[in-house]
Each structure stands twice: as structure tokens, then as C-alpha cells.
Length: 429
Ligand SMILES: Cc1cc2nc3c(=O)[nH]c(=O)nc-3n(C[C@H](O)[C@H](O)[C@H](O)COP(=O)(O)OP(=O)(O)OC[C@H]3O[C@@H](n4cnc5c(N)ncnc54)[C@H](O)[C@@H]3O)c2cc1C
Image (cartoon, rainbow, N blue to C red; front, side):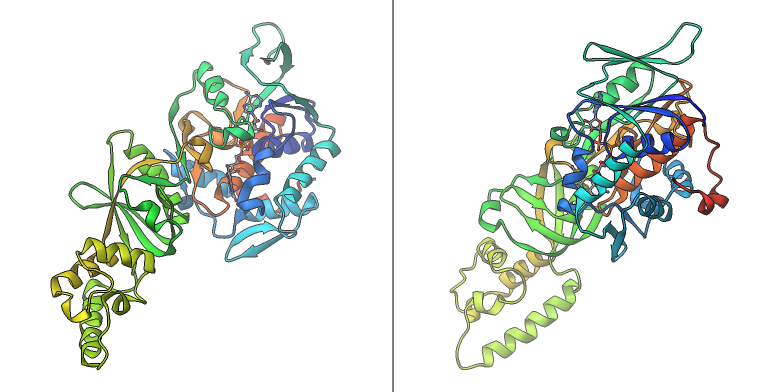
């Protein structure tokens, strides 16, 4: 038993993990949560199914100023440890293509398992406690005073786990950044990530609802590719969404801080080259023209891309859907092919923090040790999304919450640092 008094600011995924771990190491733990319940965000994760981790974990799935820092942390507490931790607290998991979910398929089960463990370990929870100030105590007793809502609490050590600014409706309003900043920490610019993109064109309402496999590239003015992703594109009435768009959104958000718009190329037929598609269309056109009954342009192009999109492409190529195929000029065919392979749109915005699953940016990790301790203020620790670490879709953000929460909880309680080579022997109970 270390007997340290540890205060955890924020009772989200990483705060609960930190608290449970610190209590498991013998610390006397208090969670200060501004809301009236713990882990509210967890309930909305993975569309209510909670994608809590991924077997394909590696640092490449993360962004942040220092990926090697992220890698070193994940080596200490990664997927295997998380699965084992949850198993030990009574939550079994299942896997689908590497993605990990609770066996019950319910995000509520993840939250309940954590909540019950918080109760089982006698962790004190102060609801409605919004930390507004953290002061390093100047007196004989080393530690911190945390003030909020007219209350003042003293701790030997404090873990700042207040989240970022994404989904503020779940409690994370960005106050964690302010608290860190006032203690001297550098905050790297924070933007919404894992969200949709809005576009300038006026045709979106007409094609909204279309979904399909596509390769999406963010481009420089000169056409050079900045970043690209492939997956299921979803067209909305204001632009583009879906997993590949979510993955690109952090890059887009940073670019849009410097420029008003970003050209985007959408390849709707990524498995065929332009030449292959052209050869196919020519052969098929010749065979259609040989048939006795003439086809319309719309009939000819059926089967290439979604009908709503093809109607738009035909219009933009200056052709009518009911135009006879023999009257569609080669020039128009080439234009339509171009649209299928190189549909250009202009991104002018991203979803806001309310609509983002996470934040890019945050507390600079170069000022934090691998035990999550501040290099500027001794005995202050960080965990979760408040740090400059953001993962791709696929369970990586919750994994960061577990990893950083575990490491912070352990170090704040005064337990020895994890030896990556012996970590499989670690018990979480
Ligand atoms: C819709 C949605 C779906 C998602 N789906 C997934 C998914 O399937 N897989 C995945 O890996 N990730 C997912 N994420 C991301 C993931 O949920 C977060 O990255 C993770 O919850 C961050 O944990 P955290 O503890 O750092 O912050 P949070 O979960 O945001 O918790 C922070 C807590 O601190 C409290 N707080 C804030 N300020 C203060 C203060 N000043 N004083 C006291 N308390 C304070 C808040 O009320 C909150 O309870 C999703 C996010 C959203 C919004």
C-alpha cells in the first residue's frame, strides 16, 4: 500500500482507468467529475457497441507531434494488457477483423464494468466538481490543492484526465487544456478530428445518401496528393463523410486554418485504371451500338457508379440521360470517365467539435514522461485525450485512454514503472 492521496480530474475512460489502477496500487483515490455520472462518452462509442481496442495496434495508427513517444507508451500497456485488464474486471471481449468489442456488444457493459470496479475499490467520486484551479501547495506538506465549485481538495498527486473538446455534450469542454496551460504546459493547436467534411458545390443535396467504395485524396493546388484514404464514402447533403473521410479530417482541419479551401479528388472506381476503364467503355459501346435496339446514355452507363451520381455526371458532361448512345460524343464519354475516376470537389470546412469523435492537438507530449508525469510540475500526471495524441478510427482512441490511464495511475500511486519485458506477469487486481 502506497497510501498516496491521488486526485483524478475527469471521470471518463482514461480517468476511470487511472483511478482503478492507482487504487489497485494502494493509493487513496478521488475522482472529480464535472458531470453527474461517470464515463458518459463511453456510451456513444462505436455506435453504442464500443470499439474498445484493436489487435492491429501500432504507433502508426496515431498522430501527434511525437510518434516514438506513443510507441514507447503502447509497448508498456497495449492491446493484450487491455484485454486482460477487462477480463480481470469481468468484461469479456470479442474481435472482428482486429477490432475489439465487448462480448455483449454493448458499450454500457464497458462503462458498467469500470463503474463497478470504481465502487469495488472504494474510490471516492465527487460529482458536479468542475476543477477550475490546480495549485501546487507551498507549505510543509507537498501536494496540490484542486479548487472547483466552491470546494477545495488536497492531494499528494494529481492526474489530469479531463478529455479534449470533442463531443462537449458529454462533459469534455476543453477546460483540461486551460488547467494544463496555467501550470506552464504548452498546448499544441486543437482541432476537431474524426468528423465529416463540408464542401462548396451546390449539387450535394441531389446526391445525398449515396454510399460506396472510393479513394479520397486531399490535394495541393498543383494536384499533388497531401493525404489519401480508401473505404466507404458516404455523401451527405453538405459534402462527404464515412470512415475514410473521418481519417482525413484532422489533416483537413489543420490545412483549413491556413487556407480557405482544399481540392479533393474522389476516385469512385479505385480498382480500375483510367486506361482499363476507357478500354472497357469502348468495347462495350461498340457492342451496344451493334444491337438492334438502341440504348440511351443512362442505360449504357448503368452499372458503373450509383445512379444519382451518374445522373449528375451526365448533366455535367452536357449529355441528357435519355439521349441516344450513338449521339454521345467520345468527348462526353471521356468526361464521364473522368468524373468516375477523378471527381473533383472543394472542401471548405469540417464538422465542429460537437460532431467530432476526438481532437487533434493538446498538451505537448515532449513535456510529459513515459510514466505520464509532467516534466515541468513534479507529481502532476496526464492521461487520455487532453494529451497531443489522436488515433485513427478503429478503437485506437480508447486504447490510448486505457494505456495512458494505466501508466498514469500506476506512477501516481507510487508503483514501480512497468518493465515492458515482464509486463505479461502484471496482475491488474
Ligand atoms: C460519438 C463518439 C464515438 C466514439 N467511438 C469510439 C470508438 O468506438 N472507439 C474509440 O477508440 N474511440 C471512440 N471515441 C473516442 C473516445 O471515446 C475518446 O477518445 C475517449 O473517451 C477519451 O477519453 P478521456 O477519458 O480522455 O476523455 P473523456 O471521455 O472525454 O472524459 C473526460 C471527463 O472529464 C470530465 N471533465 C472535463 N473537464 C473537467 C473538469 N474541469 N473538472 C472535472 N471533470 C472534468 C468530463 O465530464 C468527462 O467525464 C468516440 C468518441 C465519440 C464522441
